[in-house]
Length: 329
Image (cartoon, helix red, strand yellow):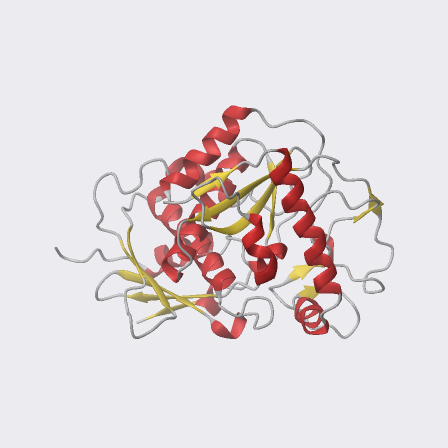
């Protein structure tokens, strides 16, 4: 089969959509290479944007790249292409994470085009949500979205929710006591202080959200005391609604699938009118991560905790120019 020829402006537009994906601390740890002869877009992880202290195994890096991969698939289908993905195509290069061709089967894009409208609308919200409960049928749809990517989404019951929230609070204490972790987080936050470099990555101050009066919601606080003046405080929801995404295995392949599932769930939730945020904090500590799983479920490893609800959707955070992350060969 002859390769599909993709004009450079089209490839550029695909990657512009792909990089709307979330990543840990908005580090954007991805690179794309278009092989014009074969019509393939290759996805690479960028270890220079990794976090040695919080993500020593690069699991979160793979999750972010998987989310970008899914966004690329959505963008391709929206433009009438049929993406066919091969994960980890080069065993001798662990940073070569995926190849995407555009000559897949006719059903390669089933259900993806409808998600395109959510790419530009999905933003992390670190603001208070209301106490309005999410209808069970919406959670059913999010579970189905995860299954389509080979993952499971668990909506925990009361005891499991309390356990996970307890792990969130414990991880905040661990973080506060670890100078290296605090320094790593600080390097990816942008407070707008004088002398701070103008960057197109990281978490800007306007995305921190308010401080919590009483810590009831699993929202990471990027605004260390004294770094942002005049930041307001607010009461958050007392009964957060969370969901956990996991897989049976804990391998780079599983991480990439979980990243794709994460993005699919987020986009579907956005279309459903839900505000969303991601919480990986308790999963960054090996001594806490195992306890996040439900021992009665088939999920062996939890990769992401979602906070879902009704409230402000948050603002878009900066993205690096496509010229920095896309090359042509």
